[in-house]
Image 1 (tube, one colour):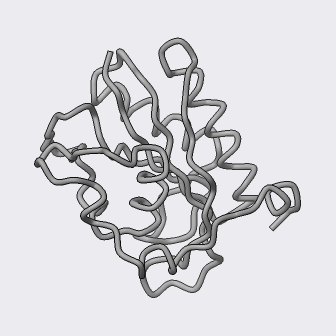
Image 2: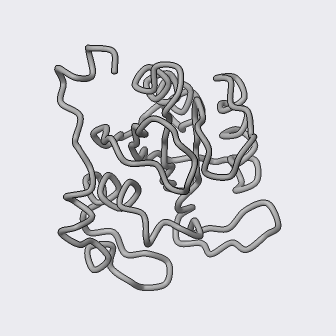
Length: 167
């Protein structure tokens, strides 16, 4: 089994509900059905496209799926939840990114692990650190060394009360 980390993001069609459905789907592909999920955070979208803020989280679980099989499973979950790939950094019902696959470094046409942009993205690093505070990345760098005060300040942690209410 391999310990994996997956980033979740959504900003269309009830994003909190989209993330909750994605967590349920991830639980089905996690070995033993065990999964750890960070808090949900809202973040400003990347790029120049006008769109609603995102809701983001990170999940951790064990899997026996090979990296490409896991990628296929993640993309299947996205499609089942209405993901349509139109614009780079555009709005979406669900985005699932494989951040880490154990300590492996993977560079294939369909998959780069560690995820190519994770070191610069507060909406990935902050929730990742919440569930894996002492994580050492495959390159040997401590996750904690990448975090800045600005990254924490750029996100809004969603409270339990906000999770119940539609955004």
